[in-house]
Length: 281
Image 1 (spheres, one colour):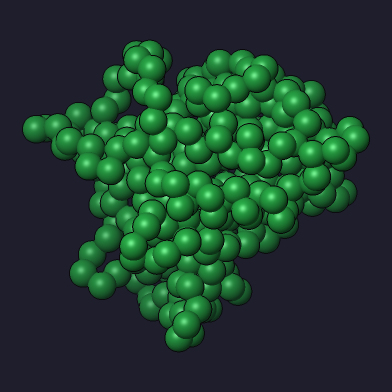
Image 2 (cartoon, rainbow, N blue to C red):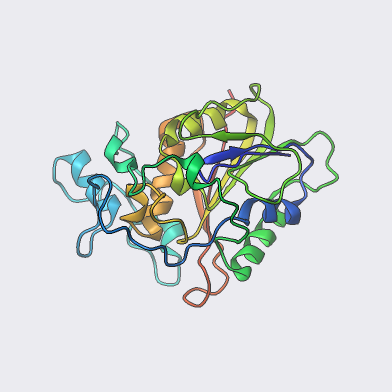
């Protein structure tokens, strides 16, 4: 398996898939449930959420010149008993152009990520229940550990590693791997730190084998000052749509899908997955 570690730094390690050990490598990142807010914002931030509005509604208005979002996302109003995160990607009508601006990927703390992550932080972002939920999900969807010839890339991993490479994806999103190398790419609670997400997702597409799967999992926990503006100004349902947008506008992926694997909604950390497969040419 390969691991890339950027809480924006990138660690890459190669070994055969071992779902439970893989999870620890991915999910073991600093916890920041109540990250302090700096007294002054480093840069102006673009805020999408209004009273009762989601980022999807706002993007729909931008894309349609101010019309309603009902024609934009069918299923934005979830059925009773169905997770809104899973519903938001049903029958999506994407705008022609990537709907976000460069300032949407600004952060309150624009200091060097290398400096920020130079201090070891031997804790986890998500609680034990969320980790267990993701472990169980991996056990269902990842190839068995004894599968010959399978290669897995774990992007943005942290301090439980085997082989790895350190690279700042926010400075250089070019991944140091050959085309069509990996069967699976995973990223746990780190997609919110990417300032060049389309570049990174295009690289993911390049290095995935045809029909290879990329699995982006996330919660609502993060280093708030290092997460991008479009993430910190929106909620869980919006986050699923945003990650799906990265897949869509990177090109070459099948329509992304969302899964809500939250272990105990409202009582433990939530946990969501947005995944897609590389199209077969």
